Image (tube, rainbow, N blue to C red; front, top):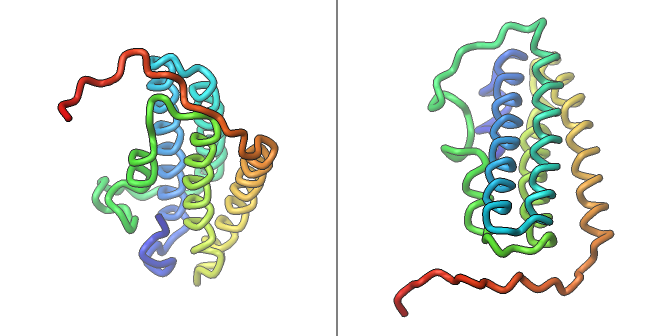
Length: 174
C-alpha cells in the first residue's frame, strides 16, 4: 500500500489527507469485519476487530488534530496515490472467513498494520522536511500499535485453535 513514491506527495496537507484516508478506511474495514463476525456468532473475533476499529479511529482523530493547522487539498477518490485502487481491500478479503479464529484474525490485522507502517516509512526520506517530520511522528505511533499487536499475537502463540463448527454450511454444488 505504499505510495507510488514520496516525491509524488508534495505537501504536508496532501500527506495528512492520505494518512487520514488510510486510517479512516482501516477503521471502517475493521468495523465491517467486526459486524460480520458478530452476525455469524463469532464474538471473540468480533471483539478483536471492534478493538482494532477503535484504535484506527483514534489514530484518524490524531491525524485530524494535526491537520487542523494545515489546509488539506480536496482529492477525488481516483486521485489518491496508492499502488492499488483500494489501499486495504485486497489484503483483507481473501483471508477472511466467518468461522475464522482469533489467531487468524490477528494474522490479518498484523498484515494490514505492517502495510500501514510501510506506507509511513516510505516518507521518512521525503524531500519536504515538514512531510518527513509528520511521517516520523505518525510512523512512531504506528510502530507502537504494531508492537502491541505483535506482542498480543506472540502471547497467544500457536494455540491450535479450531474453527467453530459450521452448523449451517453454504449449500454449494459439488
